[in-house]
Length: 238
View (cartoon, rainbow, N blue to C red):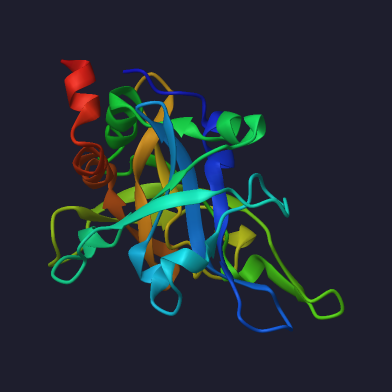
């Protein structure tokens, strides 16, 4: 397997922001996204339901954590979530990114996919990196919203009860660091492989009781990316 060190992965997460029509607050937030490269091009992925009250055109992604510079988004694709929760994916294409942004995005290839998915066993080691609502602060004097990243250890619990096979559940271990799991939708879930390296295990879509989070298997994102790009990764591997 060809995974990567964990500290080269969790910096890929960003808060999902939307440009507001109001004058009081220019932006508001809903969930998390993460940056990755696929076939040498930069993308961001998040949960599709983060767009329930906003358009894809209003989405804004910071060039790096805490930055007021936004990345140019040139195209977007939504998976079909009308019949299955594993379709709750939204991907955007990013261009002209700063070097720091490229460094913080991880390479999504067969190595990081297989390494991350190898942790999808009973009590497999996982980490979720996102922006929970409890770490959001509204500065009314400055008319700004500040969101702080949380990187939390977790354990894989298995498939979600009575649901499709591509949606899984994790249990957050270090619960003292957050009061709730709202805001993690769209967060990357990383898994540790047998060689102690890490890769992408999935994409968070819903928080629940007892600090449990449901997430889509990373294989679904891989398949979706192949569909978007016309199977470029498969042809390159062949």
